Length: 157
Ligand code: FES
Image 1: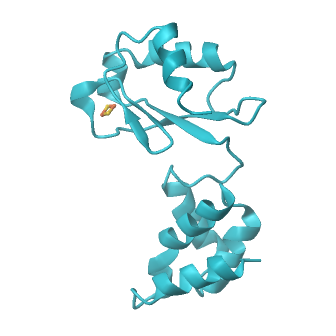
Image 2: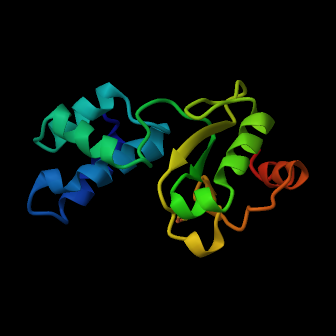
């Protein structure tokens, strides 16, 4: 069940659109802001609120890779795996991150601190390889080493 705050915020978004389904991505973002991720139950509740269907809402959620359909850690690390970053050392960056965090892509550290996910181009190809930690973009990671990576991760307790 959506909370009163979630419903109020979704209804506010609905006031901007002629068709309720047009507010699907905003509704997903609202629920994720409150809960950290969007469960199947929440998808169904959003569908009801938007006079839509769970399949339609799920299709939108699946399209946007910043909507999480499973629980994630406090900080989500998205490593760009598109071509410019790949050429500039994304594989090395990924392997270093996996080693430092002790997890693979799609996993969360046991302390719930970090989730590691791939993402397509972040639009900063001229400063590849790049990654997001939360909403922060980190660039120029071609020569990052373990010490620099640890210092970066320390900024996200
Ligand atoms: S390819 Fe990685 S930022 Fe564009």
